[in-house]
Length: 218
Image (cartoon, rainbow, N blue to C red; front, side, top):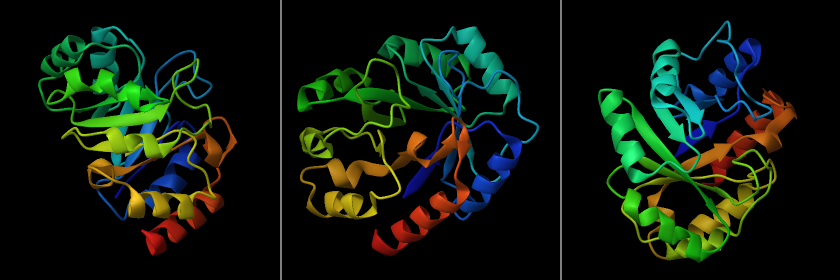
């Protein structure tokens, strides 16, 4: 299972979280390049992770700006968390030379929201299902994961949206009883605001305990 810890910025915190993620080369660390976010990365941190995949999170950003940041931060993955169209995703992939994987995020409240995903099949490498709120991501709110039983796509996805330190049992239950392709297509989970001491500063002790429990239950 992929573990993605998003909303990083502090160099020492990046090092500490990287130690927790380094056991799997599939794991990811996310950096948010949306200026409206409390976790916005306005300048390159003094340290960037070397043993997990670097993910840049963008919201309706200009393609040339995405390319510049992707090169500057040596990103492995671009996450699009806005209203980017399928054509936008295609153009961005081509502009980056096809070497960077793409995650397309969708805000979910009901099974009807899954309809918007279909045009992106075969275009993104992963989907990310987040909680539908007024702003993109980082709300700490959780949606009803059971609505994902209606997901019938072929693209693997990351489960996001308010996953917190006390959710190991809930995750275990969801994976055990989930119907359809939801559980089999869930490639991992995305962790952010509910593991923070402050915006962009993760509680490493709490995160370590959560990952330990997760490894024993899933």
